[in-house]
Length: 145
Image (cartoon, rainbow, N blue to C red):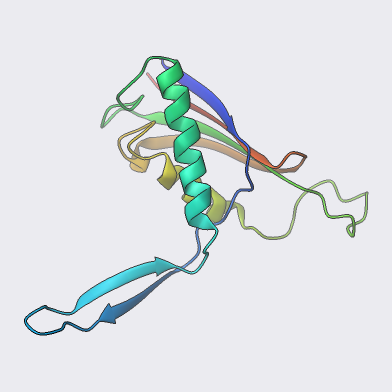
């Protein structure tokens, strides 16, 4: 079993809904469809995750994805968010946005092609939202035998 763990120091951003529109063709060019996310902060978040994962792979001397295609993968995601001063101290769990499923989707998609060939390989997952400073994402990925 291979395992890799790393931390990315940035705020986790949710994968928003996709918006699509068509750019008209000019002259002989055909019209083309464009898809974009409605969360402009997602792209920098995904780039930071990708950079951190690639740096950890390089540090371990790995150049290919940790898990080849068709190898089952287990992941643990811990998302840490700053605690707003306005919330009661007795609230210990984050029960507000961002939605956990949306930050998982953005995170898992970002690691495709780096830690695993396809995020469809993920067969086990544990994910949590926590209050904590600095804001960060702690990730552990392992191949399952």
